[in-house]
Image (cartoon, rainbow, N blue to C red; front, side, top):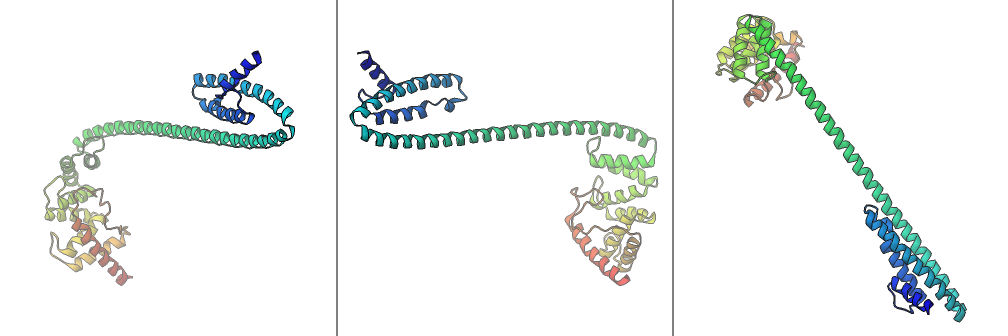
Length: 309
């Protein structure tokens, strides 16, 4: 009597009605093993333990029923059962191998995802560290620039010409201070009046393009002439361009060629790009037509160099 009750209990665990065949028992067992396999719930401890307990019950029910049903089948239909058992064993083996492959694939994908997540986290951490280092470096540089600016401003007020020019550049580029083109022009004017040729060149650009002062091409020419007389090749190049097109001066091709020769004799490197940084003024109110005229003048210089060559 207890044996009958035990069978009913095990059938119930597998979700089968009493008296189900061995084939039905094995099919139900395989389905339940897939459903309650603990490896599916690695991330949840409670579910993992519950699955382990459930799987123990399923395995126990399967083993008990298989043992009793196999014995009954063999005693009644020995030959038929042997063939069926072999086929069933082969099917079980194939399904077990398939399950193992699927499990291995799932584990490999999970490991790959874990590695990718670790890599992304490491990259994010490295980028965050790099940004922090860059901010710290920029802060340090800015603090140094502020100190330099304050020192230059103090020395410039004392009349040191070279420092006056460098202070103008700091105002122009916003280094160590807020960008202020009017202050830059003011200090360029002081440095130029004190005889700094570079200041004369840059003050000429300020007048040419109206940066920090009202645009005045005639005054630009005057500043370029002062710088050119002191051997500044860029000033000579600009004067040649102005004479070539007659901007601020009377158009004079011979004078333009003369300036062109002086530039080439000094080995002045002429940048060929149409839009390049002209003494740090690119993107700061430089008229587009300047680059067009400059391109034409470069072609004239090229022709002249061929003639002189």
